[in-house]
Amino acid sequence: MLADLAAGFSLILDPAVIGVALAGLLAGILVGGLPGLTATMAVAVLAPFTFMMDTLIGLPFLLGVYKGAIYAGSIPAILINTPGTAAAAATAADGNAMARSGRARQALEISLYASVIADLIATIVLIAVAAPLASIAIKVGSPEFTLLYAIALTMVAAVSGQDMLKGMIAAVLGVMISLIGLDPMSGAQRYTFDTTLLLGGISLIPLLIGMFALSEILIRAEDQLKGTRPGSIDAKRASQGLSLSGLKRLMPTILRSTGIGTALGSLPGLGAEISCWVAYGVAKRTSKTPEAFGKGAPEGVAAAEAGNNAVCPAALIPMTVFGIPGDTITAVLLGAFMAQGLMPGPLMFARDAETVYAIFAFLLVSNVMLLFVGLWAIRYMQRIVLIPNALLYPAVAAFCFAGAFAVNNAGFDIVIMLVGGIAGYAMRKTGMPIAPFVIGMLLAPGLENSLRQSLTASRGSLLIFVEKPAALALLVILAGLVGLFALQGWRRGAPANTSLNQQNGETR
Image (cartoon, rainbow, N blue to C red):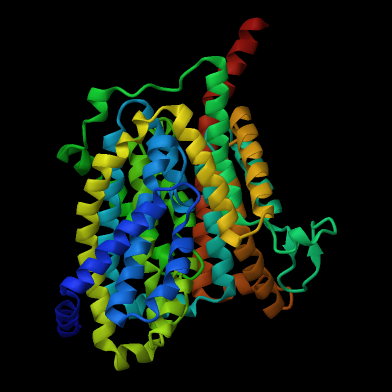
């Protein structure tokens, strides 16, 4: 392996490869930094242009776009509370609060360092244990996937804030929205109201653009009409970056979230959009100050960014070893590999070992490149906060409309975005968290499919979830998480109940 990796470095340490890879990173950062444009969209649009390139030119370019876009989605999330990509949605919760309190640069540097560290560790894992991890992932059947989705869905409790009931209502609404369209097994119409526009379901990206970006514009417009300004930027504090001691304090959170992102990324279907929320939820639950999350906690930014960036290399594990895409972006990359004459799977390591390890070597080199390109981007892009709102938010709104339409080139997606914006505005005004809604919508299709496949295979018997050791272990983990969250919720409510009883006693 080391010999193959050394040979891979000799192939990619070429000025042409480095130059094209740098162009890919810059293009990815530009796309990720613009609200409404996604990493999947960027890779899908640019992939055809690489088909006529040399393999070690085209593929590094696409991987650079992938990495740059996933990282850069945090920049507008932090600066203007408008995630550039769906994977950065959790970052906005604390990143923008830090920016409003005058810690914009600190939040941007936390995002960058967490991204680079997580990406580096996940890449080392990819190189060292790709085959073992992928073999575990490929052996996971529908019962195990059902329990994995259920475990991820329980993280709704971790991101529901102080009001668990509102969080659960939001999650149920997300699940219901995900059911719109055609039944994946029978083909029957569900909640389409006899219109063909809903046969394909609700498009996720336009809805998220509306709920996160457009709702923020509506909130800011309301503040402007009322004459209030949400948080001024202190120029002196805004220029202060992350100290070494601050980074050390965040390392446990970064390492834990990296492990979560790597584990979820190595399993097909669980991408950065889910990983960021799971990592954020775990960080909140394990924090000594969970009440600070959502109000500018550095741990929240570090967890979300480490969680989503660790997915990038990890998602390549099932794709390269077994030809199974880890997420939507690697599904596009799979087509790009095949167009280059590479057939992802076990035989690729035997037939094209040098090319495979050249790609692995590039992932390490691009990680270093991302650090320096990211520092450059922070230096200039943090000036977004200096743009007058009268110019900034109309421009963001224009990007929202363009991004929503560009996903499927469909005008109906603009309607979805507008409805999502109104819904997001209403949820934020009533204190209903958006995160559980997003998690419910993301997880429900996978949970439904794996659950129905399991029950079909077992002819309706629930014993299929305890017959295999892996499924039984996951069921125990699920039960433990439910019990832990229930206990924490009870402890949180106990003092209030005691105080209420005391007041009632005094009244008597």
